[in-house]
Image: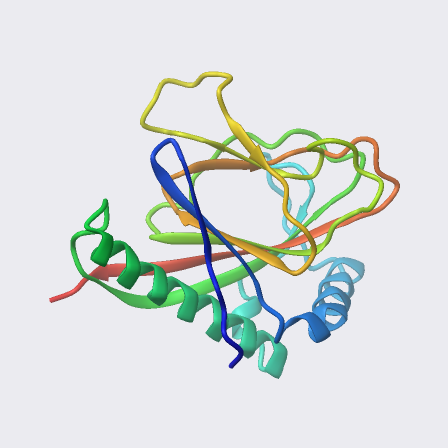
Length: 201
């Protein structure tokens, strides 16, 4: 597997990581085709908890090699983060053991409204892999907003915009939400991932 270099930034004294995965870039079209086939066949969820279209969180259960590669890359990155953060002596002092990972697709258009801030607990690490980012979105439209759940709800959230082929990884307890993109004429497609860890014995 190609070398993966994590970029580490801190917001609210919380690490957020980003990385480009060159070994997966040639498979972007395969991920998108799989997702759009699911949309066309009605394999999406109805929910009043979020806007846009979302698939079941079963994409890592697919047998195609490109989904296995994404699963393995995500788990490898989480393991590297766990090790690095323990060595830093920061918030991750206790050792945890990986249990399983899940993945689903999120599809957003100009008509997609605002999704409330949310977390992915009880998972430990969550990620967004940016498959298709419209080229006509101004400013921070289509980015990902983060907000610290340790503080009262304010308007102090941080919006980070990522490019196609980038993955953002963050603690699952960190509040986040996709930013609407009302100006675009294209579709924004991302893959969301969770990694469940339990305390090591």
